[in-house]
Image (cartoon, rainbow, N blue to C red; front, top):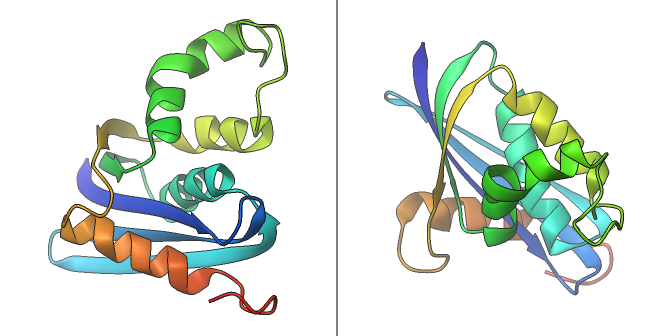
Length: 147
């Protein structure tokens, strides 16, 4: 299988507020950047959307190294998701999982790939993370006057 390196990040101006997501994909010497935004969202939703859109952009099954600076995404996918699914998408406190629609979309998008999850400290000089952050911030909708 092909090995892909993916850096993802989300941004929000206000929480909730206008938000953006960014993805940097690297495959050998090839590089692809993706981004998008929503008028009213949360930072956690944009962090999730970045990973989902990055995985959906892959045209075939790949070995993927996903780098995220979101502990919410990292812990959700590696620690919490199996329990949520076993409880019918409910938390240990029996409340509905927040952002369930995106967690389910991430679960589905991840099925086609062999993924290694990596947490990277945000704003600490990692070039891939910094680029994903820039893409996310640039994608925050500006109609509200936010930049």
